[in-house]
Amino acid sequence: MYIWSVLLFLFSGNPALRQLPAEKGTVCVCIGMMEREKGTVQCTIYDDQQVPVRMIPLQGGHKNGVYTLQLQSLPAGKYVMRVREQALDIRLD
Image 1: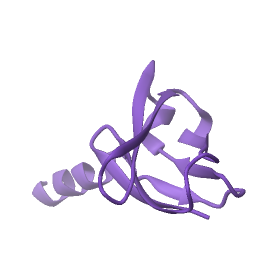
Image 2: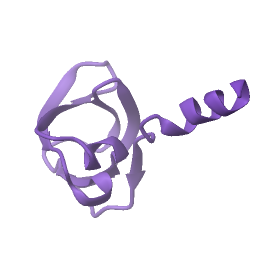
Image 3: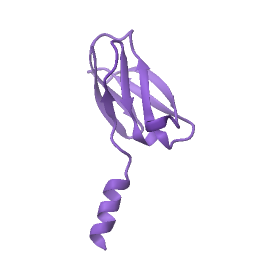
Image 4: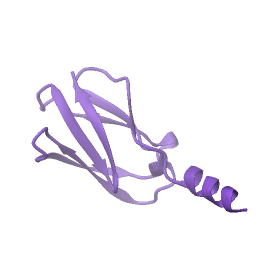
C-alpha cells in the first residue's frame, strides 16, 4: 500500500511547465495545471538578473493549458517564467 500512495503522490501533482515551438517574438508554453484552473493566475517573466520584466495574467481553463505569450518588446535571451510555485527557463530568439 505504501508504494501505491507514493506513486499516486508523484503522478497526481501538477505537470511541469514546458516551452513549445513558437514564432519569433513569442513564447508558447504548456502549463498543465492551468487547464483545470478557474479564474486568473499571475505569470511573471524575469530577466537573467531575476528582475521582473513582464507580469501577465493568465486565464485558467485553456485546453491543455497551452498559452502563447507576446514578448516582442523584450530582447532575445534567457528568461525565467514563474506561475505559482512552478518555474521554467525560457529562451527568446
